[in-house]
Each structure stands twice: as structure tokens, then as C-alpha cells.
Length: 280
Image 1 (cartoon, rainbow, N blue to C red):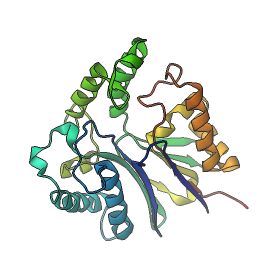
Image 2 (spheres, rainbow, N blue to C red):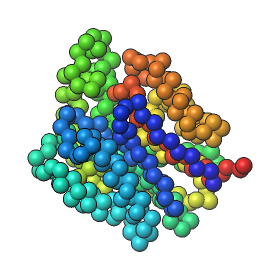
Image 3 (cartoon, rainbow, N blue to C red):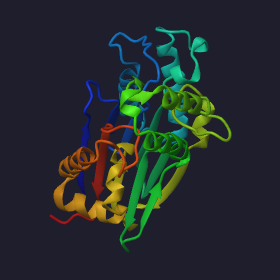
Image 4 (tube, rainbow, N blue to C red):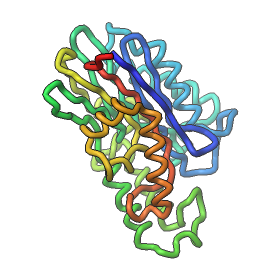
């Protein structure tokens, strides 16, 4: 099997992360902070969170005596305990809380377990060429409201008040964070243990898998050019680093975000590609 991976950011700190263990692979997409407040020593709590999860998962995700969900629930308990060393969680508003999308695949016998919490994606292409995408689109629907608002405001570049957003856009985003881990809103990896059970879990027979891709939502601009099947073939041919270079060129060609709707001109982008059918 061929394995490729890459994570790229245009910011000072990458809030994405990936991991590979003997039996598992995962990507984590930290949700950008909607506040200037920070509590951890390096000043970026989202980055702190994704690195904490990497350390925890690298040491625990291959424990086949536990389900992926059980491992994540225990992880949230430990994360909350660690984070409370810096801040009282009960004082944080929803938009100040840490959150991230997470996608995990794990080999368990002859089965590939796939788990997603949030709008990250796992794409499985079987040997007949059919693609299955495991993701939660709830957040995408909320983000679309803000994207449409951005498109309609042709003077917005003169109205930016916080990390590329106008006050009106920021208010929408903060209000959407209030819907985190609640019915009618969206579910994501955060401080809420119960949210783990709202993730999407599927299993696939390894013998039927041709390709598998784990991706953070920073790759969304590539949707204007590739179907998921074509994207997987492009990665097989050119590799993950080249596809991310192509992504960045697409973003630069649409700096104003008019052709490709998105919240950020350049989002963090992370891929882990597993080619089960690769023949050298």
C-alpha cells in the first residue's frame, strides 16, 4: 500500500494536523478562534488543541479493545482536565471554546473503520470505481449563509474588523458557534463528551477498497475542478503535495472569493492518502 500525506498553511500557525500509526490514520481541522483571547502558553489555543489530540491519538487510537468513540470520549475528559489548568471552561462562551473536525480510519481485522465528527471528509473508492464520502454537511450549511453575505457586500474589504471578517459577518459566525453540539445545529469535537455519539461511523471491507483519502475542508476549492473520483486519480498520478500546490493556485486566481465560495482566501489544507490498490 502507498501512503502519502501533507499539511499546508498560509498562516503563522497551522491549525490542521494529521497522524499515522501502525493501524490508523487521522486528520484534525481546528476551528479558527472567533476571539482574541488565548490561554495556553504559545498563544494559539487551537494549535495547542490539535497538537494535544495528536499526542493522545498516537498513543491510544490503535487500542482495539476500545471503540473509536470510547477512545475519543476518554480523550475529551483528559483534554478538558488539561485545558482547565489554563482557564475555567465554565466561563467560556461557545465562540471561545475549542473545537475541531476529526476524521479517523482504523484497520480492525479485515475491516476499515471510518469515523467523522464535523465537516472533514473520508473518501473511499472501491474496486468498482464507486466513491463513498463520509462527512457531516451541517457546518457547511451554516457557513454558506456567511459566504453569501460576503459575496453580496462589494465594499467589505473596507469594513473588515476581525481576521478578514466584517462586523456583520463576525456576528453571524459567533451566532453559528452557539449552535455547536446542539440539536438543529452541528456536532464537532470540543469539550462535550456526548457529541462523540453524533459522529458518523461506517465500516468497509479492506479487500474491496482501492483508494482512501482523509481531508480537512481546506480542499473545498478543488471541488470546482475535480469530482472526488477524479481527485483521487490526480493524487495517484501526481501526489498530495502537487494537488495542494494546485489548490493554492486556484485560491490565488480567486482572491476575492467570488468564483469559489469560501470563508477564507487560504485555509489550512491537510491530506492523508492511502492507496490500497497501488502497483509500483
